[in-house]
Each structure stands twice: as C-alpha cells, then as structure tokens.
Image 1 (cartoon, each protein chain N blue to C red):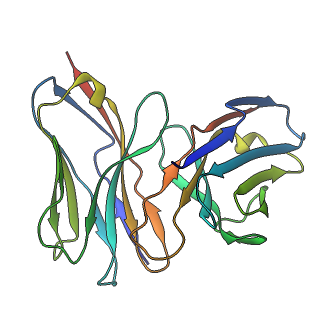
Image 2 (cartoon, each protein chain N blue to C red):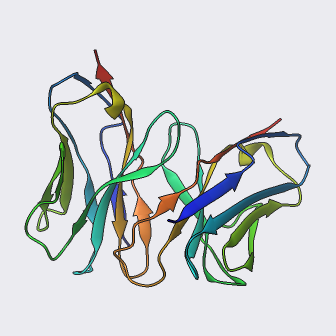
Length: 112
Length: 114
C-alpha cells in the first residue's frame, strides 16, 4: 500500500534563511507524481510544486525546489530566502494509478 | 478560468442534526471531485471521490455520505451528526484522467458539532 510520511510536525526558520521539509513515501509503482501543497492560515490549499517520477531533474519554482531521490523514496522541499508569507502547513502528496495520498503535514513558521 | 466554491464557510450544528455541505466547480467539465476531512493538527483524510455523475467511491466507512447530482456539484451529507464529525472539510477537483493531475481546493468548511 502507498504511504506518505512527513516526520517533522513543526518547524521554524528565520526570515531570509533556508529550510528543508522532509517527505518519504512508499510505493511499488514506477510512474507517479509527487506534490507539495501549502495551506496558509487562511486555509486555501494551493499547489507549491510538482515532480514527475520519471524525471530525474528536480523541479523548481522560484524560491521552492525539491530534492527527489527516487531510489530512497524521498521528496524533500527546500524553501530559500524564507518570507513571512511562507508561514503555513505544508503537505506532501503522492499520486499514483489508484491513489492520491497526503502526508500529515509540517507546520512551518517563519520568524521575523 | 476554473473556480471552486464551497459553502458554508463555518457551521455549528447540534449532535443528531442533519448536514449538507455543497461544492460546485466552474469553468471545467467532467472533473474528478473529492471530499476531505482535516482534523485539528492532522493531515487530510479522503472521505469520498467521484469520477462522474452518480459515481461515488467511499474511502472510509462513517456517518457521512456524498452525492453528485450534477456534473460539477458535489454534496456531503449526514442524517445525524456525531461529535466526532467536527473538523475542517475540504472539497477539491482535478482534471479527469491520469495521475499527474493537480488538485484544486475550495476554501473549506469549519464544522463544529456540539
């Protein structure tokens, strides 16, 4: 069965610094997608970044980038130059043939 | 552009009362639709998903039910609410087909059962 694990319930980072959020997953599928979603205090969940399992190149979106290690089944999110607006709950998600699964989330607080 | 509407934003209901939460999507046709529950401090639990009108798949046996009376309308219901039904409910949609689809979320409904 597919699982998604986020082992860091809470993290904090100083403004302008870099932080990495961890995510591991388990699947027997070869073709799948991985996502990071952000849920700010306003509660509207939005997509941050997406990675296709077949692509070796790590996805990047401005200050957000991932470190995708397929063999290790690891998918971490790096936020560079953290901003106060990055304060949110971050969810890692897996999309495979039969399932779309979210992790339990990491609450990130950016400190001024 | 596509938009998703979910209402009400907040709801306080007594134990044993019925529930109806509604979600509609605009700007797309034949979407996949989802209902999630997010308990305080926890992740997202998929409750129901639908790939078409009248087609509902339940992920977790519970006190809730879902219906899809129209292509872009998804309703979450209960005949009698329990205290444990309290939580934050999110509706989402994605493009039909494939595995690479991004899910787009509504603003959510905060349900308090007292």
